[in-house]
Length: 162
Image 1: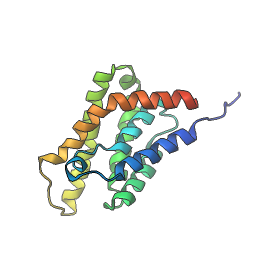
Image 2: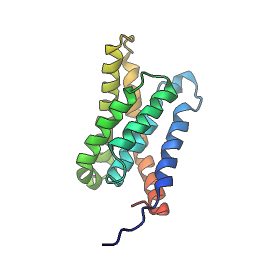
Image 3: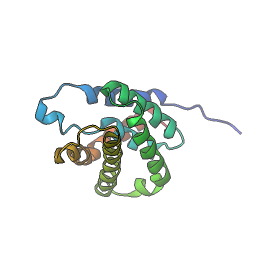
């Protein structure tokens, strides 16, 4: 049995780092409220494309990084991203065959689930409840998904991530 060397680990790590940068890039107040969850979108892509390499452990570490970056309760994003990764890895064969429009609908549900988990955690710790604008980032993430998918697929093919 010959094991092929794993390639493209830097592409996975680099894309998550770029997602972190997109998360903290300064934006005007009106645009900051509509910023999509870049790290969650990148995790969805990698969990769907290479579920044997990116899963719950990667999601947990990415979530801890997101918590540290945004100054939220430590483990809040980690919990949401682990659940997200679990669902995507379990359903990756179904999601992959959908056209981009249907994938975007699945991504909307997944991002709404992440926001719902964070909403629940914020309620448990006594943070004030946000208004309806809180649910705008999953909608924006859904609109971004087709372009992100095409870009990430190009990165995966260029670096030979398997």
